[in-house]
Length: 198
Image 1 (cartoon, rainbow, N blue to C red):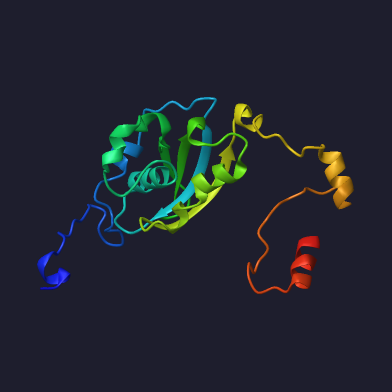
Image 2 (image 1 turned 90 degrees about the vertical axis):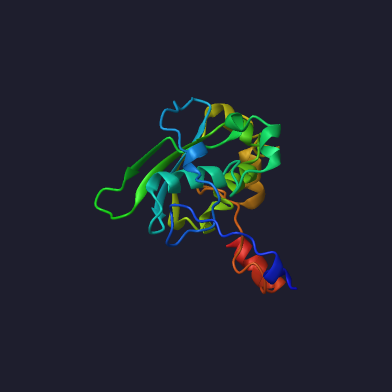
């Protein structure tokens, strides 16, 4: 007897049927909290979301909050090992985009305890790293991000100061940005250096 014949797992469907059948529990039960009052210490993200057909906007906003913080598609035994409420992102407000069908603005605050101090990489990986390919959504865009002063102060900046960095790079009057060069693979060393320089 094959695994498929003898050990078929039951199919579980949610109310958010048509394009989204992966979830065992509804995210809005835990991650949609309209009574939440934002704090000055919250990192506040504003997302434009387009839910899959059949997915309520509150579920889509809650799914974004869950997947970008502490949520997973099912309840796990490790959920009881921490105070989830202390660390989770949550969608506390969602509103329709004026003039657009099935597009919404979701407001998602995150507690600072969720992020490593002084790491913009950690912050962005958490907030936008895994959520954009989520099946509950047709489309998602990060519209705005409010970062509290207390978190900004944890960033050390260049060890020698911005003027020294600009002098070393011979770059003045423009922002200094770090990014991934595209394509990530396939460029010769010469062309990669040229892309970095430009």
